[in-house]
Length: 600
Image 1 (cartoon, rainbow, N blue to C red):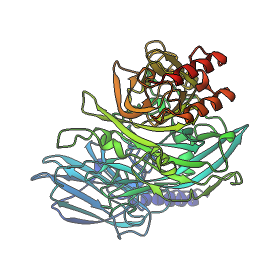
Image 2: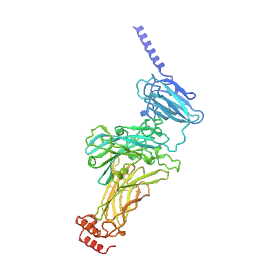
Image 3: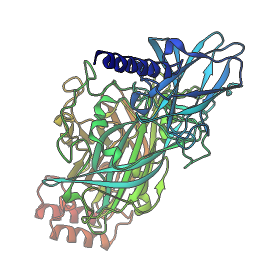
Image 4: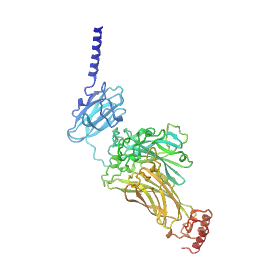
């Protein structure tokens, strides 16, 4: 028996030794195979390779399985190096490049799927720098043989447009269900890099895009924001061709000309949704990871079931016959926001990062299903730009400023004026903040001797743990100098009050007794001192410069003014308060008759 045991033990030891010998010679970073003169084509295998411990990467959720290593030291002038496995393997590959040394590596390129399920990535190499190349498997299954191609080409010319991400499509609506009266959705998005430099998409740092979804409604003469989501954090980029011809570079970057789809359900994955309040949309900066952001930032609470962090909408705001619903998506990312245009140095690539799609929402959509939004996506424009499409009486104007670091920030203002034919006009404004981190705390219309009534305000509703003070209604004021709405607190008093923050809109409305004129309103910034002039919009004219007897505002004093006043007086309409004493009574009638008898 002891002899048999000895034979068995010897066989087991021999098998173990054989397994160890079967591991590739370059299984460890320290034993990386040297890549010589370029171009190089090197046969390799991942069969029996082990997983490298403690080495993360910037794509495929931070790891490669059963990886092997190569080492290349660049000589000569700076060059663009391409590492590729295309067509050389029958399994799902991954590839990365690093600088540094084994045990202290920094990722410079990463890709999962570039050519079918094989991988290709590029990086710019500097003279004398050593690069470690890592070939692995997407999953822990069996790998196999491959051929690594390493080639050099002239580096690309300096970017003139830089990385420039847009929303190429909003291609799906996923319905997660409801809790009480709140319904929850998420929007599918396809991003496109229309610039001439790769866009960073590194999941393990804050150098990746965050993606927001919003819902707007046009109804009864108003454009209103009725729903918003937290922000999906991007984790890897594919190499598709929705907008342009893709360069084939993906993974840790969205290559030049490339597009990347995120399905509607993926954009609603709660674990990847971070707070909007973490993000400075002007610079694209946000803390990473959002789950433990550090001092000065909220730590997200656990996501409530079903509706948490997703695009939330109240059921009462949905499915109104005749209303128009508009889905909107926006990408924010640091390198896009901060790229300085070579002409003038303005940082303005973030001004085209939002797109919209007129959408069909149905009360019968099945929980857990994705449906097409209907219509087509309008690229590089916010949803407010559809208001004048629906209502030609609406005028939308843009108002921008450039900060001290040359970042260009923009607000959109939509204006609709309705003549009520009773001596009053209703002014409806919607203001959309595209990317201003300064935000806004006050909207003010200068006018004198105006009677204002029926003030209205609606802003965004933050949820899922964002500070509830951010939802407080703005305070309306009408006095001798004008009409305004303002946050309940200043930034110094409460930094979490309901400012008009990036990626959101607020709607204001008021009825006055004066006809419109072209003039200038103002927005007061929230986080810093100063104002933004909203020049050339329709505002109420001063009561002191109009003739009170011209009740209908048609610049002619005739019997129609009398008839319109009598109609307003009979219906107790606000414009019938002719003497502006806040009471509609027979004295208003007498004062109007006196004014009509001796017109201006």
